[in-house]
Amino acid sequence: QETVAIETLTDGFHLLIDALKLNGINTIYNVPGIPITDLGRYAQGEGIRVLSFRHEQHAGYAAGAAGFLTKKPGVCMTVSAPGFLNGLTALANATTNCWPMILISGSSEREVVDLMQGDYEEMDQLAIAKPLCKAAYRILHAEDIGIGVARAIRAAVTGRPGGVYLDIPGSLLGQAMDAIEGRKSLVKVIDPAPAQLPAPDAVARAIDVLKGAKKPLIILGKGAAYAQADDVVRELVEKSGIPYLPMSMAKGLLPDNHPQSSSAARSLVLKDSDVVVMVGARLNWLLSHGKGKQWGEPYSKKFVQIDIEPKEMDSNVEIAAPLVGDIQSCAQALIDAMGPDWKKPPTGWTDAVRSKVEGNIEKMASRLQGNATPMNYHSALGVVKKVFEDRPDTILVNEGANTLDFARSIVDMSKPRKRLDVGTWGVMGIGMGSAIAAAVETDCPVVAVEGDSAFGFCGMEIETICRYNLPICVVIFNNNGIYRGDDQNRSGSADPATTAFVKDSRYEKMMEAFGGVGVYATSPDDLKRAIFEAIDSRKPTLINAIIDEAAGKESGNIGSLNPQSVVAQA
Ligand SMILES: Cc1ncc(Cn2c(C)c(CCOP(=O)(O)OP(=O)(O)O)sc2=O)c(N)n1
Ligand SMILES: Nc1ncnc2c1ncn2[C@@H]1O[C@H](COP(=O)(O)OP(=O)(O)O)[C@@H](O)[C@H]1O
Ligand SMILES: [Mg+2]
Image 1: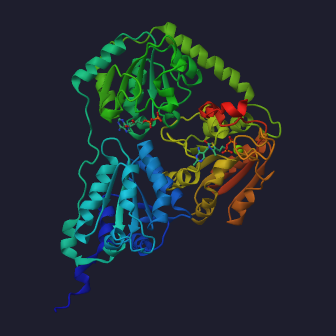
Image 2 (image 1 turned 180 degrees about the horizontal axis):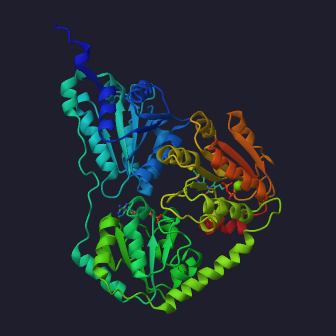
Image 3 (image 1 turned 30 degrees about the vertical axis):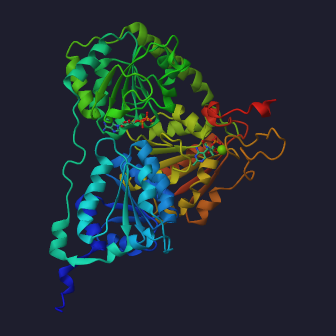
């Protein structure tokens, strides 16, 4: 039995790390534990940035946000079963948002799982993950690690991006093999997200539909932000002269104060437009599925839709001009086809939109002033609005109900990919993970404007923020409750739905407990001073902003989605 010199060997641990590094993955968001603890240590030793969280769900939200910001798959690593399940919510959320993310979870050996023999944290994770993500793979042999990682990376970013599950049975990591053979087994992924050009006849059809428009509208979605095709998107909007409406995470693709922005006239443009160009945006619940009174009656909309996913077309309403391809290629093709003499929309339309925008901005402006205490959503967000005007490189993370709805329309963004929020699902709890990823991936200061209930889903990660000394300022809009803090239950007892939280909770002391800066802010002036100080000092900060508990409304702007009981009303 010849003895093989150890230096001529590699193993699963190191092949996995080498495969990730070979493909430019330089960060892992994880919670350590059996069987991946040493994997994290070795990865860090090989120069990968490994951040350890307090709960896998937030490591996963960080990985998803990293995917959105970088166009590379964000990697979340967890232990088996419960750790995997905690990460799965974030994987499903990334898939729903069309963001590239890979969840790597340790797992039990197949022979034990398949016989259900009761292993430590035993679960058939691959089977459970499959329906909830874009693709799922398991690797059993060290020599397959190279191809397995390559498949996961390509699946995450190609076409419509999404979440991929990679199942790593514990024994794989310890498998040794010849180092030279191991190196040869690694795969560098070539052109994982190739340009997908639209068909010339599809472009011609889209131009035809656009030429017939009297009141056109462009809707920019987070797919347009993700695509990082900023120049061509801007050129398409400005060359066409068409008013545009950015969805929340597309804000900043063009500055929100752009003369063609119709955000402040959303109801008018959805109702009165006749041709609508969807650019990396879906006609899902966020846009009332493209039908109903919000879209004007009698209904006569014509849609042009740019999307990399062919099956998205006709998802909710007929698409008159489907343009299947990536945003860069489709927008460029439209610009080329528009030619040098493109006729801008009738001024009757663009002037009507513009004056509605200016009127609504005027009306809102007065509500954003004032130094009264307690603050309300408008006076507090008037401060946040000013901060982002002065610090355009700062990234805004935002979640809550009223805290989200009001901030989305009040806080203008002037640069792309500077706003991270609850996404397509409307998930509470994305705040801290998103803030950590934003700070780690961009090194920009981050301000996370959180409802107090939303913060409750992820608050323990402020210790993670302090441990890595990240430039994150958490602003909690403390209105003492979910939606509102003074709602009464119709049955008279304590309201389980909008339970008022402990009155005057001193959240800022949590941050002080971990060495961060805690601020108790009761006035807009307090709030402004504290946010600027946090951004400029780059110190982990939590500002407990006291908001009038009567200021909000249940479910923010989407209360109408609640089912109504006919019995209870009787
Ligand atoms: C994971 C999860 N759980 C529950 C909800 C339901 N929900 C919940 C619980 C919200 C909290 C709103 O309270 P808040 O304090 O964060 O914000 P405001 O008080 O400013 O409205 S908003 C909302 O849609 C959700 N969207 N996501
Ligand atoms: N590079 C890209 N090119 C074209 N479409 C893309 C690209 N990346 C993502 N998409 C598409 O963008 C859409 C994003 O829609 P959605 O998440 O609903 O945005 P929003 O919520 O902002 O309206 C998805 O249908 C997705 O397929
Ligand atoms: Mg609240």
